[in-house]
Image (cartoon, rainbow, N blue to C red):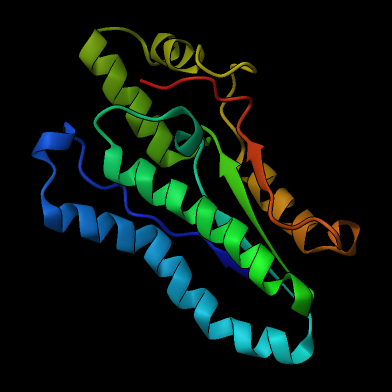
Length: 176
């Protein structure tokens, strides 16, 4: 099994302000990194006629995220990469899927919420509630849920699950 869980956040700026270097670096840091790792494991998986590849995307690939175009495009490219690899590698019994996490309950998200609270002059709990209004389930996603989905996709219970992009995001509807 290979889990490609990498991505660069990229610049936070309007599209017209994104440098070509930032664009290339962000795309390479997500879809490019998954390509390089996948390329290394596929020969062995083909030889065994078995394998599972899981690529970690982002709910932002579904919702869009203003001022984060390189990141969103990189994750959308990762999803297209997953779908195409599933089709290409399926005859070798290699399954390829993507997981689309939402707002994760981790230090990075806590920092984002803290920054929003500071900017809005409100308590972190109020900033979190404001942020989560765009997710149907109104909750941060525990990291273990994403890991559990990756383990499920690698298990015998998912032997015919391939070419899918599975949201573990509490139904991300929109982001700002």
